[in-house]
Image 1 (cartoon, rainbow, N blue to C red):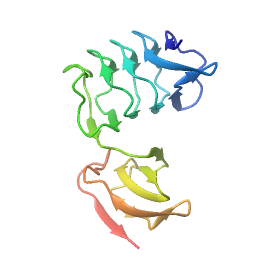
Image 2 (image 1 turned 60 degrees about the horizontal axis):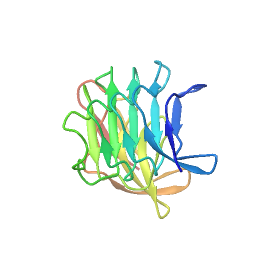
Image 3 (image 1 turned 135 degrees about the horizontal axis):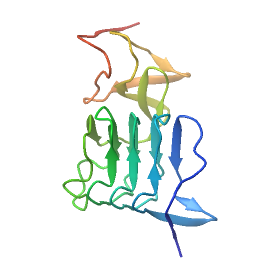
Length: 178
């Protein structure tokens, strides 16, 4: 016995984590029009365990970051529908899975595959943490001067993803380390 998400209510704050369990049973599917989000939501995290996203399962207006775990093996046409073309999707799969529809999303800023570990963020970076080491994925700050820290919250920054890019920064960026 499992559950599907039909509708999501009670959203507060800027981050939504879509759960993979409910009442100690698995949640496997996000049904069509289950999650229609307002403009205050910045980050959507899908927990590992969700398997399918049906057409228009997630409709987002101003979300900047959507994370998709390896467990999501099927995304139907427009399963993730973004009204803002600046949205970026970070997926654990090494490349687009075969059962993701060719039109799995629309107007997308970026789709980055091969993201491992738990994805975290602060005011400046999107990063993953694996074995007490941080890999920087993306710069999400506003400055054109990007400072790469040696650590974040006491955890060492050991690498930068080859797809690392700056968002919402006009012109060029000057990158420095300490």
